[in-house]
Length: 385
Image (cartoon, rainbow, N blue to C red; front, side, top):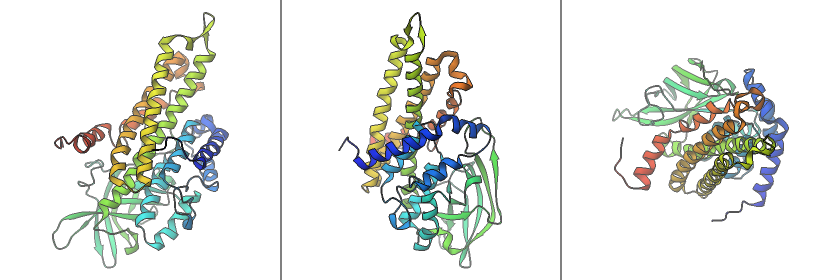
């Protein structure tokens, strides 16, 4: 395994870091507190080719891999601009359509996803099933050549910014009566589709929604891939989701750590910088260790995924998501502690991160489910659920 990133990715990181610096944490928080979006940053990132770096070149993308898209998200987050919709639009939806979509679906969606002019979000979680794809109840029934979708989804990000939702539903097998998972592209303006904002105690430009599908009629071409192979197709999108979730947390870890170190070097008490005291220096050093370990696992997961090893990537992606989320929580907490009372002052931009990073333990998969996965698949222990 090569621990040195390719020169192209190093250059990509530097360019994206410059873009992130141009906007910065103040812009991000200003937009979030005002209930506004980060459209200017999103559109510029799209024009520069950063949003579609992982998508095929023939459809307007950069022809690279998830490792490069993850680097883009990490650098933006490290600059104070963690764009959550990068996890779902180009990473999950773009990947699934690239790998399993029809030629018409690719031509219709991928160029817009790549240049930022169109966005697609992802809907799997349900009120009673969580993310358990085996228990979802959103059902797709045949309607002539098309489909009728009915069901509910919850905690779906960015629906108000999206042109369509990639919905995980279940088809009914007329012969056996069993329900099988399938993926559908649902336009957000489709009759019978409604969404309601969920009030959240997280300060972010992206909103969360409950979705209601009341006999939504879709054409045959709304189905993505093979209705009999949707589990494989689904997990082809969930590995990138975990890798991107890890990168999201890594960037926030870097952002919080940089702020803490800068303050510890600048702030003086009794004539010396507070960072000269081990009570502050050691916790910050520990976070640096956690950051580098989580980053290595994230790079491993992305490398395995881009090489086509979906199963190997699954283990590493779950571990990376777990480790990065923990590092982010520790980093933000210690950054606030290092700043003392200033850590909760609006001027320093850290207080809002306390709830944001906590989400990393819950989504896109809870840390308990990650530990279940590791216990069962990595250690060979009996299934616990």
